[in-house]
Image 1 (cartoon, helix red, strand yellow):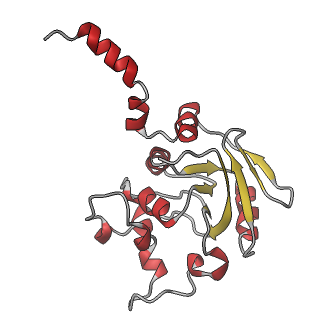
Image 2 (image 1 turned 90 degrees about the vertical axis):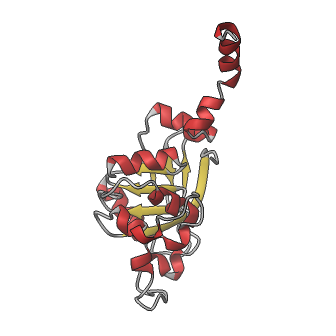
Image 3 (image 1 turned 45 degrees about the vertical axis):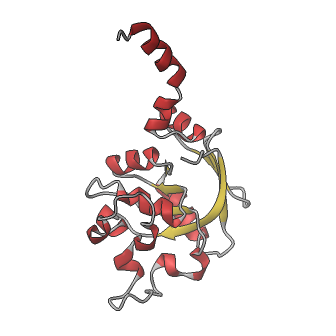
Length: 196
C-alpha cells in the first residue's frame, strides 16, 4: 500500500447519513477478482441516471468536487454488508481519507486494511467541513504523525487512531506486508527449528 503520512487534498462533501456499502459499490460490480478498476462504479446508482449518463445533481459530479481526495460524509458511513470492495472503489476513485461522525465497524476496519484513513470527528466539525467543501478551492491537510487536520482558515482538530493501524498506514503496510517485514526473523527461526 502507499504510505499515509501527510496528505493535502481537495475535500468533497457527501451530505448523507447511513450510506451503505451497496450504494458505495453496487452488487452487480462485485464479479472482478482484482482490487483495481472499481472506482468507475463508485456510487454508481447515484452518479448515473438510468440511461447511464452522469446525474448532474449528485454531489461528486459537481464541478467543485472533481479531483477530491478527502471525502466528508454524515454518520454511520459504510453500514450494510461487509464487502471489502467498498474501500477498493473509494481508493480507486482517488480518496485517501474519509471524515465522518461515525463509521460502521467492519467498513472502518476494511478501510484501514486497504490504505484509507477513516477519521471520526464531532458532528459540528463535520458540518463545518461539509459547508466549506462547497468551495472549489477548499482543501485540508491531514497529518497522521500528529493526528491533526488543518485548513488555511485556521481550522485545526486532532483525531484518535489505534496505534497499530497508525503504524501500518504510516509504513504503507497491509497485513501481508507487515508479516513480510519480519522475514529475516522468520527465516532465522525456521533455520533453527526446521529439521529435514
